Length: 121
Image 1 (tube, rainbow, N blue to C red):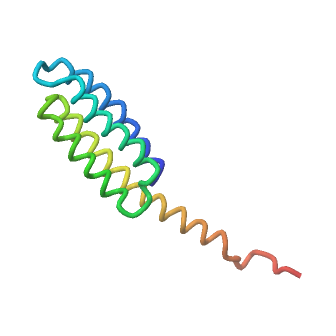
Image 2 (image 1 turned 90 degrees about the vertical axis):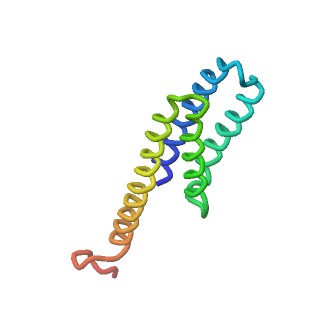
């Protein structure tokens, strides 16, 4: 799960940075505000890569997805990109857990001796 979720988060890192460049064109927003909010979101993306498998990591990821969709109020194309990344986040969590379960099953099968394995002398 960690690999899939981290890939999604790193993609979001770049999308947030590019959205900040677009948001800077808005005359109602100061450059400091845009980069403070975007910078916090970008740092959160990187930090979440390390804690996604810990308790609460996936929940924080969902909070980031909600914030990304809500950023559509400032940069309208983020409505679309936010929904796309929320779907990618769901897929990363869902299929990542399935992959982790399959790996655990294969590791358990490899650890137990089968009927065809020779007995140690």
